[in-house]
Image 1 (cartoon, rainbow, N blue to C red):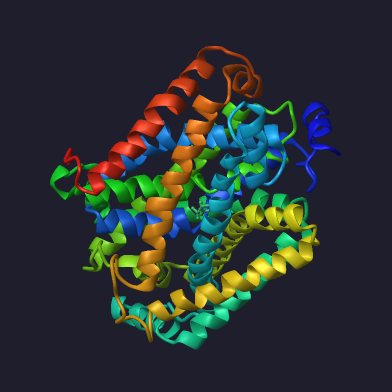
Image 2 (cartoon, rainbow, N blue to C red):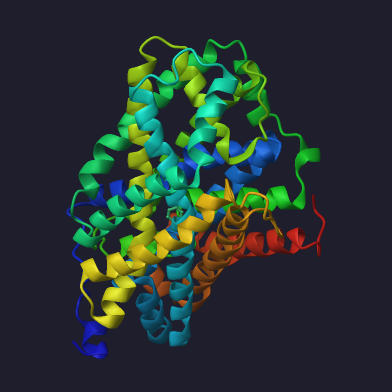
Length: 461
Ligand code: PHE
């Protein structure tokens, strides 16, 4: 089909469509809910002092993340291609330039960089399934759990092995295409994860430190709110919602015409935020009850939750199911992290999905070895933000995602005309006007202010 014909005919995606509105909501939820909620949110909140960080995070989720998610989905559905091609096509169609496609290309690389370390952490989760089944956590104290964690993370070939397995599982699904398996996986994963989180929350309430946990998360101490903490809170909002690199845009390309983007986005954002808060509420009482430090970094969740499992009846079963579900949650996010890159390779170079997914997966796997080693042989090698892992995480979550999100929301709010966006968002009612105000003004200005503040040009915190 020529470009012009493609513009006029109702567009179809090359990669198939979601079978229903529910399937789309599930897929985006699967992308959003993952290690970001259970692993990253608690440790980043812990490192940045709790309450005030959480407040900024919540504000960012609703006034920046939500409108950007809606922008991504509407752009994706209108263009119906991979994010790079979609933004190039719409850029031209809306009277600007095809160069907007570069935002999509940046997202392809951003997603690959994120997945390179995401897969390593997911590997830790996989290895914890084995430790759970064999009862390694039973009756352990904090030092015992730390030793188990250290035996995985501190040995580069053990960690590399689990990373390899996780990448293989991810490539396998991505190679098969969006309709295969993903919907079904998410359908039991999210409810299952919620049930287990409540079991853990129940345990946390018995530690006697629930009040402290609650206070840590919800009593803002603004003196802990450094410019970098504000940046981290914004980065966490982008990361957790999967916005800023085109993952949601790629999924939007497979969305049926009659689905309400506003409703779907609200549902995903609420579920994602709820799960993150639940994880925080569960973890901090355990941290305080065991005299651990909230700021102990990426190992936080892996060193606290096993304590809970090891001390509760039925802990072996609960732990096994929990780490299984967490690995599933990571899996559905990882798939979305590869989707933009894979679709881009397939469409740009006319290769098969299997070939595209394998090549992309191979590159990501190799990059991931850097993160594997950041926790052992290269742990002493630090620069800028810390280890190689710290730098990758900082660069992607705190810079690339917000920058990508900024360009996406500027595109949807300023480059696309109101007719196009209101058509996608179901008419020009009150909700539409609220979205447009957030997308044109609030979200871009907020991202710019947080950036300027972090580099020291402003000092509002
Ligand atoms: N949102 C996912 C999580 O919270 C991670 C992710 C980030 C996925 C960016 C896709 C894009 O685990």
